[in-house]
Length: 406
Image 1 (tube, one colour):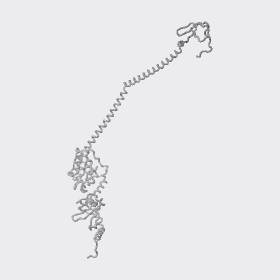
Image 2 (cartoon, one colour; image 1 turned 180 degrees about the horizontal axis):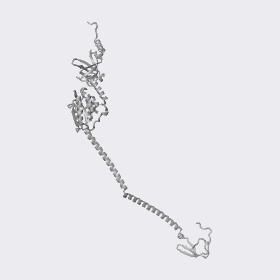
Image 3 (cartoon, rainbow, N blue to C red; image 1 turned 30 degrees about the vertical axis):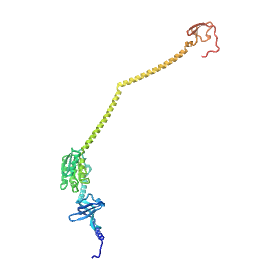
Image 4 (cartoon, rainbow, N blue to C red; image 1 turned 45 degrees about the vertical axis):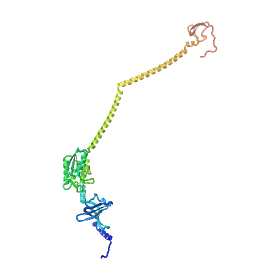
């Protein structure tokens, strides 16, 4: 029997210390197939890695989920990087994952970044070389697999938007050996067909599946193509070198069809809107011109010599009426003044005075007698009264002491 007896905790702790002290186990990457994968409600991921010789338990805690860029599932070939340590409670070791990548993706990604950097330095991504996508394309070239989901999506979207646009398919190989050359050949073949715009792409997949669109031969074919090219490779999160070289990138093949094929229904609606707007504008302009014409016609009517003569005639009539009025007023004033003079003269008339009992005395020779000194006693006098003349002789004259006041 051994002299020293240890508890289970002590043993597990000692073994964990051995694992912790091993530098190789602190930073290790293990490649294998995922099995027993479980996403726990706490956010942790529990799974195993296996190959033909064995299995190792793995865990990725919720705080490390940033190191997983895809949804891991049973059967995935992955590379798990982290540290191997002992879980003391169960007395078993497991791999604590800090980063998980699809197998082979790391090297391919490094190759992708290197090629992207090289082509960018060549100027193949320069926006100055980008060609505009035609708004109303009549023919659309498609470089993709003949039986894939991408071509069916493009055909469906194009048929819905505009069945009058002609689609020309180059059935290219988009995956595996010779795929890059096939895609490049398809681009050149459709360029000779003088299509208006070209869609180059495929459906989604792993980085290995999409690798043909990262090849330099495809990038050069797109860059040298005189026809505008829309890249439509994989899903929205997938990025390839073809996306950087192309004149426009679409997140999916369906979106590429939306960009390449103009919507006939919307165009008809827009044309109808333009027609109604043009008609409304013309009606408004016609109404304004018609109103202007009426105004000009009215002005011309007023400027006609006949109306000028009528206006002058009316003015002449008004002046004539005013002249008559003033003449009548003047005659009335003169008549009134005449009547006043007549009345005044009537009051001053000797006859009027004679009618009041007065007489007019003359001497022989029609000399008016105004004073007693002008006659002598026995001198003949003529006394005029209203109905005749009295002949008399003056006997004597007596002077008044108080003369009449005038």
